Every structure is written in structure tokens, then in C-alpha cells.
Image (cartoon, rainbow, N blue to C red):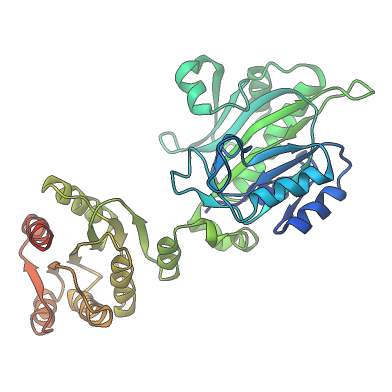
Length: 404
């Protein structure tokens, strides 16, 4: 699960991490009110969508010369003007695709006098089972470009969760960022705070870009501040973090995936035209592969799991058919815990409820397979039965081509 920047900063602030003052706003009036709470005279108005590249993005409804989704405002009037430009309009960035995302909320923050920008991130390294802390002096840039063009400017520090964060991890981060004196000490402290937050909240990824060093104040002191951050969380651990789960913004997610989550279905929309309903992630991957092997493309990944009910299967079937790109459906079930007759009942119920109008091929094998096949055969629906996975893939591809 992802959250917005302002929500992520609220979480980091609870760990004593320095962030610029700021307030979220859902309307132009609230954006103006938020700016008036800040010292100024510079303000930053930031579009809040679940995508990176907001500053370089463009609004569909505005001209090509319009400013992007992150703007520096020099007055309250500028804040108001920028808020009117952004709210309700569609921001297209390198991460949103051409369809973009509608901006429904803003984050108005105090301006920061920046001396230097850095990059710092933490993520789960699945290859080692450890936490990887990635740091670079090249903050504010696309880290993918830095990794491709100048990989020597990126340092990865691995932290064993069994041992936890140690002082040498903080020193390594500060050294990699070439910080000295008080800033070096600040970095060591910050790295430990970020690791603690990462582990406490079951994050999958925590990215700070940029982490900034401010210009020295009148006393000659500079600070490290989190200027922008992204967070994602392990969905399987959200039951431990109801406060984080409450931050979910369903308007930022694919409506079909939101609906799937309500029924505990693992669903991801893809670009093909053959809908898939399978039990088991490995079997689902094999099903998608064999569809491609036969010259077609899957429209989705959908795993109904091992203990699905008739209602869950019905919901899964309706979810597949809600995609207008779907021109045929392949159901591939190997019944173990999931009994074939339960799947068959769900298929028949869903097909009748949605008035099935696309070809449907079903391959059943396993527990209660004959009962399942009998239910399908006696349903009165035009369901094509398959003997095995290869046969099923060939039949659904042929049916879709025939119907085209």
C-alpha cells in the first residue's frame, strides 16, 4: 500500500525526523489558509498523487507551457493561483502513463533555503533477506539515471534485521554523503531514526529524494531536512497498523484492484484480452505464460486462493468481466483445498448474473472434478470444457479469434 507525501511526513515526524512545516489541503480556500499558517515568504505547492516526477509533469487541461505539479510560490496570491491550476486537473508524469492522475489534494509547505541535495532510501533486499540502505550525493535527480550513468555515486549499505541498526551503518551513510562535523552526526542519527520507522511500520520501501542540507542560519548551523518522501507498506502486515491502513486513498488505485481487495482476491490488470481465473499464484503465472505461447495476451492476473467460497468465485468472475478489453475467459482450477464443484457453482452463478457474452473455456482437475464438470455441462451455458492446460489455452485463443 502507498500513501501520500504529506501522510508519510506525518509518520516520520513522530520519530523526531526533521521536515519542513506544511499542511494538506483539499480546496483552494484551504490551501490559502494553509499558507497563512506558514512563516513564508516562500511557499511550495505540491500536487499529491501516488506517482513520482510531479515537478516535471504536465497538466492535461493546461497549456504546454504551464508549470508542473510542484511549484514555488512567492506570495499567498501565487499559492491561490497555483491551487486553482492544480486541483481537479489531470497531472501526467513519467510514472502515471498518458492517462495521468487527477489531483484531488495539495500539500502546502514552507520554502527551504537549500545548500545541497542528497538521496537516501531503504528497501527490502529479497536476495539477502536484509534491509538495503541506498545513499547518493546526487539527490533531486532520477535515481535510475544516476544508477545507469554514474553507478559509482550510489552506495548500498546492508543491515541485518536480526542484528539491527548499528553505529557503523550510520557512519557509512554519512561518509558516503561526504558530510562532516555536525551534519555528519545529524546523518548518523537520521539513518537510525529512518531504520526504526522502516521496521516499526513494516515498510517495503522508504525513499527520501531529496534529503536536503539547508544553508547555514545566522548562527552558522545547517540542518538535514526531508524535503520529499515516498512510502510503501507490506499489505500483509497492515492489520498491525490500523493508523497506517486508515491512510489508504482508494481514489489513487485501480478501481478493479480496490474491488478485488474487498473480496480478498489477488488481482492485477494487464494489457491483453483473455481474462484468467486461477487458484494459486504459480498456476496463474503458468496460465498466463501458456496463453502467450499460443499467440495471445492475458488481460489479468487473478488468484482466487485455496479456500474460496462460491461468493468469492462469483465476485472474481464479475471482476474479470468488468474489464471491457476482455474478449474471452480461461478458468484453470486444480482442486485441492479448493473443490471443483464450488468453482463450477460460482462460474455458473456469475455467468447468469452478468449475462455472459464472451467465450468461456474451463479446465478443472482435482477434488470433486466430475461433480464440477457435471454442474457446468448441465448449466445450459455455452461453456467449453478442456482436458488439460495446453488444451485449454489452445481452445480459448481459438474461440477469441473466431468471435473477433
